[in-house]
Image 1 (tube, helix red, strand yellow):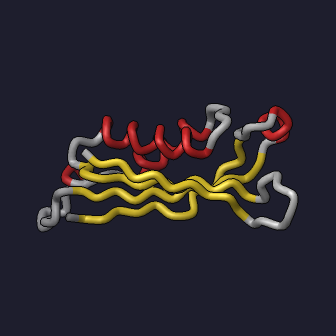
Image 2 (cartoon, rainbow, N blue to C red; image 1 turned 90 degrees about the vertical axis):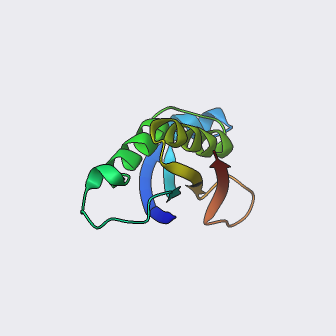
Amino acid sequence: MTTIRLEGLDFFAHHGFYEEERKVGNKYTVDIEVLVENTSYTDDDLEKTINYEEIYLIASTIMSVSTKLLETLASSMCRELLKQFGSIQQVTATVSKHNPPIKGVCKRASVSITQSR
């Protein structure tokens, strides 16, 4: 198995349970890890692995749609990556909201979801 990670994908987006959060927007960070069945890359062929740019585009598209829950975002990323790439065996998506609206100091609230074939 090969592990591919995209870490620290930063977005400004309009997610949140509260209407005000969705209006004002916030900074979010996404980390994605995929496990791919291929382990031999002797021919240096991008078609035999997963293009990082395509992973980013899927995450970016999902982050552009206003959503109430981080769980929904992470789950959508996992489902879409498994749907688009047959060689992915497992995917973990972590979505973090910076400075969540809680009564206290919190740098980030995060949700990680893992889905497999």
